[in-house]
Length: 111
Image (tube, rainbow, N blue to C red; front, side, top):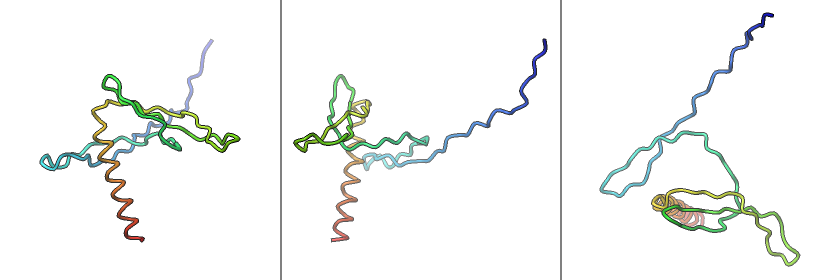
């Protein structure tokens, strides 16, 4: 019994897109460049349910609002947990400060 080999070519694998991102560094160290591979997974969340650090691990629980109870309080479901080294918290802080400053500047410009 003979078998036929498929003549179909396998689809070419695409290389992931890359970009270079600036990473905040103390002023005396200058700016570092880090290569970031994209695409990243995107997930929508309504809020941050909690944040904790245990044994050097940072955990952030995010929630989605499913609806409201009869008394009007939100029904929340923990939808994702982000876990990363706690020593990276400073990077999060720096990014949040930049975003907050940009929002405040935009509000002052529009006000």
